[in-house]
View 1 (cartoon, helix red, strand yellow):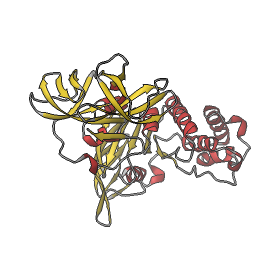
View 2 (view 1 turned 120 degrees about the horizontal axis):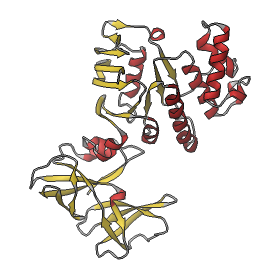
View 3 (view 1 turned 30 degrees about the horizontal axis):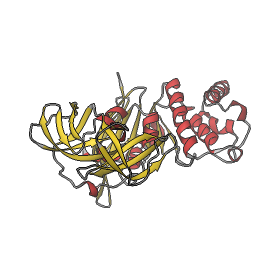
View 4 (view 1 turned 90 degrees about the vertical axis):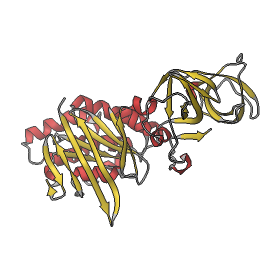
Length: 366
């Protein structure tokens, strides 16, 4: 598959402070990529550099095999054939919906303008609102118009900068899936920047977790969750606990949850100390189990309760349990580990507490 966007060893500093360091990635034609990370990780600077608003200190950027940026300069933003969707929509308040979408089509013949506007408003479900002004629309409707305007000139790649952050949670999740459908329907390649992993999972084919200006892992959502390559990725993606353990044999490790058997995510020699990532869904509540754990705290989530449990080994774990199993703090409940793929790290080179926390993660050291 042809590559639409390629970053080769991109670095960028401001006032002597590195914001992006040796960033490399490739996005296939028609794919949606995402740069995911906490505030200050460098993801927005990376997007601005792709757009042409910043010049890289080192490296090269290619769009559709055409060099658009290197330290010497590059192609101006308006000639890179990119579209931009911003956090604040950036719609023109004095123009109607139709006129906003038409903004990028002014050089096209009139008949072509009308055809393209009608086509895009139909795609984003806003045909009935073409004569209204932005202030007459909801946030979600405004974002759809911003998307239609960005798609109007048929860009080679669309850049989305935290496009849903001003919306409420329910609308944000629904709109992210709708935008993915629209991009796939139009065959548009895109790069999304967000701090919200749920948006990243809903939209992107490939996700890059960024930390301190570096790309920790560029991979599918499945692999980020089930096969994180670093402790930072394990900490940032999803919820879980790192339990200390010891490898007994191939596919077998001893932990505070007992001896776990399963496929190792990474090779680890026999006898080596390791830290094993246990997700809440790996710990199943079972009234009849002889193995008990004490409820330390609980987080009611509607259909589920996330329990924090104390093991007899004094390690702490998480367990996601159907909410009709409502237990009290201090109560002992039966549990059964069901860990099929064992995610383990042979050594803990960096103290886990030094990592910045994420609103979307919950990981503790056993």
